[in-house]
Length: 483
Image 1 (cartoon, rainbow, N blue to C red):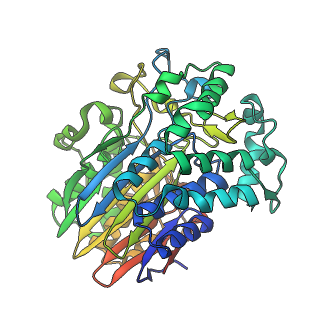
Image 2 (image 1 turned 60 degrees about the vertical axis):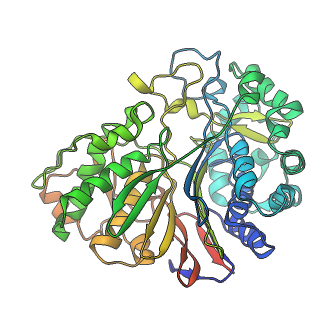
């Protein structure tokens, strides 16, 4: 059951219970919310390699009493030797992995414990093993051919069935080295050489200079007024600005009839996603773009694509720091390009390139689906994130609207039935209260089970006047805990 948990020392919500446990352990031993998010994400890289990993990316919004809200973009660029075509799979789709560098930057600025201590839970789980869930086993079965083509024939996961123990000593060693020596242990030396060798062995163009020259982008977030507070999203190259565009339209529109709320949400999603390819190039200027919403009928403009991946972590500590984050290798198992010496896969984030201002070019960042959010209102800071690629913006939009316009508390807003717009069709559960009204307005509806993974899995943590809190979705395998 989705409910808000109240703590004293800290709070964690994540895409897997083992990640929650790691984050809580770090908070209990004196770590900050930033330490906890690193610890939890590192564990997710061990137990959810289909969704995230050291070879992928991460994006973070950090709210602290000292610094306000800061955005950390841990996405990597297209290799300098890459060609002009869009490559969606295999080693040619690998961009520079940005997650590990982002961890180091978070830790350097906001960490309280040593990085080795922060990564210790992930090291232990990788070395001692964890039981493979049915979802992961099913993903392996579905993608076995890709994984074998990408060099993963020796990976123990390929032979591990549901509930069997998977041990990953090579991954444990890499995490331990990063803990001892920082991000350079990943981007340079033996691990960096192994990454380059794996990509080039399978036809990719990633080079040592691409890895060694990578830096995170640390900057101010995009912010828009939201009710009595402020909504913060990750700036471009993230498409989080699309959520900000929708929230800004609602803010300016004033009160809306409750029976039109879902219709307006779908129309806004289609309107803002028409600007997706311009996110990286236009940035905050997209907030000046007019959005067309017809209150009387469905526009059927299409928009969001039908794919999903990623995993979220949200943390809060007793000092008032709150972190909203997402980590990803993009598609299931990323590019399926395996680094045997490190026991991890590389992303296929270059598949995020499209055309026009989002066309691939050497050293360019694609428009990025990772879109964590923070809301600062009524004396509380709340982190919200969800997996789901193009579903992220629309899932968070529905949760925020349910809280503001329907008066639902956070847990009830997360628990409520959702729709998802993709390619001109609206996926919707049969029991959704707006189903008949949406049909009358002309939306193309596709009956979809309420637990379908395409509806996302929100994780949330926050700092309130009473202390840290956390809540997680009942969908997927999200979990939450407090101490």
